[in-house]
Image 1 (cartoon, rainbow, N blue to C red):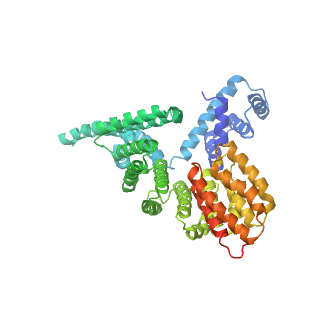
Image 2: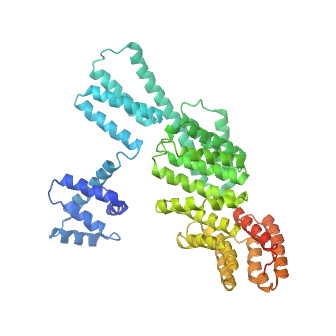
Image 3: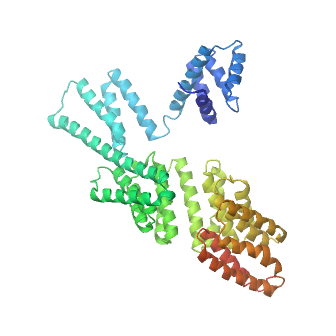
Amino acid sequence: MPSRDDLFSLIHSLTKAEKAWFKKFADINADGKNTNYMLLYDAIDQMNEYDEDKLKKSFSRKLNKQVTAEIFNYTHHYLHSLILKSLYNFHSDDTDYHRLHVWMNEISILFSKSLYNDCEKLLRRIKKIAKEQERFALLMHILPWQRKLVEAHAYRDLKDKDFKAMGKEELFVLKQHEQLIKLSQLSNELVYVQKRKGTPAKKTLHQFYDGTLKELNEDKPDFLSVKAEVQYHHILATIWFGKREFENALAHMSHMLGLYFLNPEIVRDEEQRLLGGLNNVLTLCVDLQRWNVFDDYLGRMNDLSTKEPYRGNANFQIRLFERLTAFQLRAFIDRGKIKDAVALIPVIENKISSWQNEMGAVHLIQIYFHLAIACVMNENIDEAHRWLRKLQTESDQNLRKDLHAYARIIELIIQFELGNTELLDSIVRSAERQFTQQSQLTQYEKVLFRFFRKELPSLTNKKEKQQGFKKLSTDHSKAMEQSENSAPVIEKMVESWCTLRSNVPNFS
C-alpha cells in the first residue's frame, strides 16, 4: 500500500491537463454517484504540505461524519490506484513505449474473444515496430503470442520451416537481449564506480578503467544489435573521457552518434542518450578546438530536428534547441565570430519566449551568460546589460554557481562602460566573496579585481588609462597561464575589452 506522503506527492505532481483528465475519468468511474475518494482528492489538493491529522479532520468535515481508520485507508488506497489508472490512460498515446504496451493489452483482449485474425494483424504490426526499435524485452513477450495463435489455429497450414523459424527467432532475440543486458550492466557499473571512487580514489578508479578496457579488448563482441554497438562505444568513450584521453573519447562518441543518425528508429523513447552524446561531443570539440567536426555535428543535428521521429516531438525540439544554442554561442565567442553570435539573438529570443517554462534552467543560464558576453564584445553594452539582468534575476542562483560568479566579471565591465564607476568596489567585494566561497578564486581573478579596485581609480587621463589597459592586458595574459580554473569565454571577453580600451584614440 502506498504511504500517505506518496499520495500527496502524486496529486501535487499532476499537471493542469492531468488533473482535468483525472476528474473526467473519475466522473465516468463514479457513474453519477457521490464518491468519498473525490472528497479526499480535493482535501489533499488544497494542502500545501502533508499533515495527516489535518487531512483526516478536513476529510471528516467534507463527509459530515467522523472518518474511521478503515474508511480512510480504503479510500486512500482506491484514490491512489484510480489516479495511476487515469495517468496510464492519459499518456497511453504519448510515446511508442506506451502505445506498444497498450496494444499488447489489446492483443490479449482480442485473443480472449477468439478474434484470432484481428489479433494476428495487430501482432504483426507490433512485432514490426518492436524489431525496428530493437525492443528485445517486449519482443520476448510478443513472440510467445505467435505460438498461441498457431495453437489456436490447430497448426493449420503451418510449414516445417516456418515452425523451426519461430524457434530460431526466439533464441536470437534472447541472445540480443542478453548481450544488451551485459553491456548495460557494465555501463551501470562504470557509473557506479565513478560515483563511489571518484577523485579521492583516482588510482583505484584508473585501475578499474584499465581492467575494463582489457576485458573489452580481449573479448570484443560480435554485435547482435545496433543498441549493443551503441552501448559498447558509449562505455569506451566514458572510460577514455575519464582517463582524459579526449581524442579517443571523441572518436568513440562520434561513432555512437553516427549509429544514431543512421538508425533513428532506435532512438525512440531514448532521446536523452542521443542528447547526452551530442552534449559530450560538442564539449570535446570545443575543448579540442575541432571546429570542422563541431560544425558538422551542429549541421547534422539541426537537420535531424526536421526528420522523423523527431519533427513532431516537442520535448526533443526544446532539449535540442537549448543544447545547440548554448554550444553555438560559446563556439562563436571562442572563434571570435561575435557578429554571428549576436545575429542569433532574434531567433533565440523568439524560441525562449515560446519555450521558457519548458526549458532546462541550467541551459537558460548558459544562454544568458554567453549572450551577455557576446554583446559586450560587440560593444552593445545596453543589450549586454539586459541579458546579464536576466541571468541574475530570472535564474536560480544555486544552479551553475560558477557562471553566476563569472557573471560578476561581466557586470564589472558593463557598469564601467555605463559610467557607473561608484558601483565597481561593491561588485568586486561581492565577486571576491562568491569566488572564495566556491574555492575558485585564482590568480586570474585576483589580477582583474585588483585592477578594478586599486589601479583603475588612479588613472586620471587618456594616456594613463591607455597604459593602464595595456598593463592589464599583459597581467591578464600572464594570469591566464598560471590559472587552471578560468572560463575561456571570460578570458576572450576581457582580452577583447583590454585591446579595445588600450587603442581607443579619444578614450577619456
